[in-house]
Length: 133
Image (cartoon, rainbow, N blue to C red; front, side, top):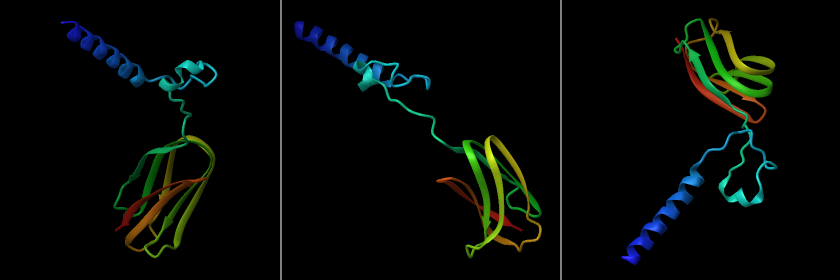
């Protein structure tokens, strides 16, 4: 009976450790806010620069299309369109922007085919395929 109770206590202790390591801490906690004794249980993360929620519509494109995305990168953003040979056919720059981007692009003068839309800001690059009909 003693071994069984000991086994149960060990399981409870281990489960408490596992639960304590799975807790999420708010982004506002800094390295100076927490003493070193908690360091193994806390993962410090900074807000990572990102471009997300990318929408390209309509796709396939006939005349004009829209590009929408959210970003927290406060630097120049380039929207570049390449043809299937890798040549730049269109380039738009957005100066020092952070938040929701909604850009309308004219694409009526280009031949039907496959094109690649690239969103670039510093070292962050996202490339998506668009089809011109």
